[in-house]
Length: 188
Image 1 (cartoon, rainbow, N blue to C red):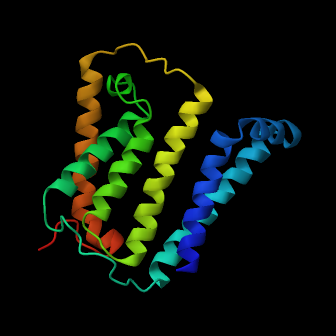
Image 2: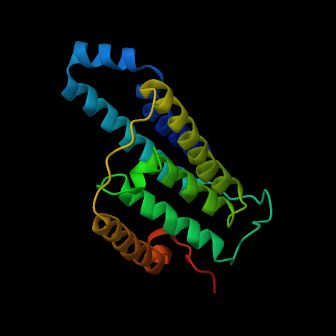
């Protein structure tokens, strides 16, 4: 579990750092240059992901609680919403007029959906840890940025494209989840 914990902590610290200490981030970027700073950040994220993957594989899952919605369609609906929000975070659409942090909200829904269907120790650590990180990230980014300036509306077709792309990604992930992650997305 140590590698998994280290990966989740490193991921969280690397991402929270700019939101919690924007002045320190600016000073480091000015001192070393924007490119080297971003390179170090990228290396931190890659290391965190490597630790998470190897930590997940090395950890022996121990039961912690009975997953309340295993086999229910609700977690799948939450995952579809998470993917819609994740796609929406990088495309022009009207969802951004209602949700300030769509990417962080996507991580929140992704984590919660997995916690509703997985009750073991490593799932609690990974999905619970990243869910907690997403909540903290939203709080600190909102605090740093101040009042929310909602974006202007865009044509409805942008929303349709966002949902269609998300539905295609969701379908692909559901189909390949077993071969990618070792667990079928829809229990048989």
